[in-house]
Image 1 (cartoon, rainbow, N blue to C red):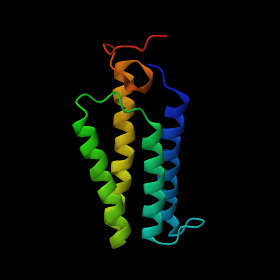
Image 2 (tube, rainbow, N blue to C red; image 1 turned 90 degrees about the vertical axis):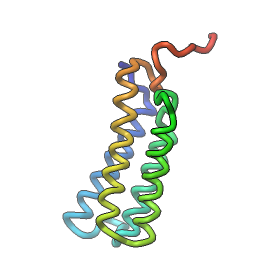
Image 3 (cartoon, one colour; image 1 turned 45 degrees about the vertical axis):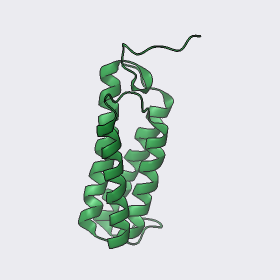
Image 4 (cartoon, rainbow, N blue to C red; image 1 turned 135 degrees about the horizontal axis):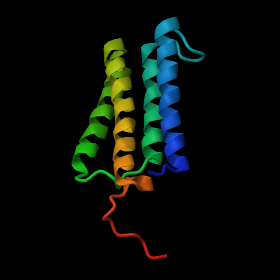
Length: 124
């Protein structure tokens, strides 16, 4: 099992988002985040950046990952529109779960980027 620098950054982004969310819950305000809508924007940006850095090749079949990503995106948009703290909580958990699932798939495959061990390697 090898993790790349991108994996560390992607996981770190989500970890920061989760910490900011926990502080937001405890205090009610974090630095520049005053409302649930603003917190949803922070989580959405962190999640999208994390997902764009993370590997995509490890999920076979890919459709469950695609569905989960769009469902999580929908939760983020719904949290921004409604300002619901309950929807925000589900959105944060779903974002963290997606990263955890990607790390598990990558760890099982034993290769960076989550490529299955039977996948063809590019010619070097």
